[in-house]
Amino acid sequence: MLIEKMKAFAIAGCVSAVLAVTAGAPSAFAEPDLSGVWLPDIRDQKRQETANMPPWKPDILKQVQHLVAEEKAGRPFLVLSHCLPHGMPSWMLMTHNAFELLRTPGRITLLGEVDGNRMRRIYLDGRKPPEDPDPSLHGTSIGHWEGDTLVVDTTAIMPQAYIAISEAVGIPNNGDMHIVERIHLAEPNVMHDDLEITAPNVLTDTWKTTRIFRRYPDRHYEIAEGECEQEDLMPGKDEHGNDVFLPNPQGAFGTVHTAK
Image 1 (cartoon, rainbow, N blue to C red):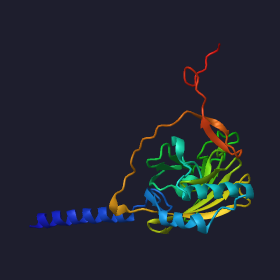
Image 2: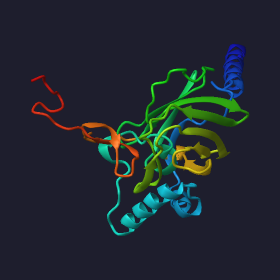
Image 3: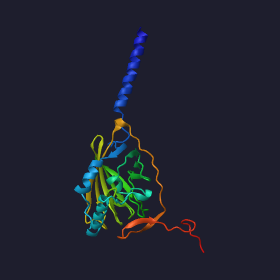
Image 4: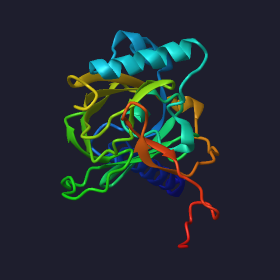
């Protein structure tokens, strides 16, 4: 009997120790946990299409008004055509699909759903912006924590990256764009992304806007894989002089031109 009591005491002690260690174990990161699958608040996106318009330059505003009219007439311009990455800031502004946020030492990675090549890295390893950057549609994002807020500075964005307020209304930034985000949890499963977008070639002033994302841990969402056939494109200008991608002229062997 004494031996059985000693065994029971030992087992209870082990369980208590395990529970104590588990309860007191620190998380992998000291900052708020932003990991998981996030869905955009589409209703708030729609509200901001008219409630908080970017401060477009006058000539750009005319283009935007034309795009809005075309959308209402049933002839929408497809901002997300060609299977190109959404680019920044459009990914955070107007995408209707989910993304998964992954936290690993030194970086945060965002993986987008369905819309082609959507992957964004936010570096948290203390690096400086590259002196000779290789521009991309998502740019180079470097972040740091200010308390419970993740501050992200994004530069080196290609001029073809759109500032899009909807899937049918957007304008290429045309170069020299700079984005600052302040990402934080408004509630345990509600994330706010406060964006400040400076694009001197299309905006008269810095545009400040907030986008809302929600996660539903009890639903166990996972992002889905999609397919998209990309065209053969090259940088060019549209009829308004905006930086865009245009179809690449095809030779007898596709885009491989042989010497005559």
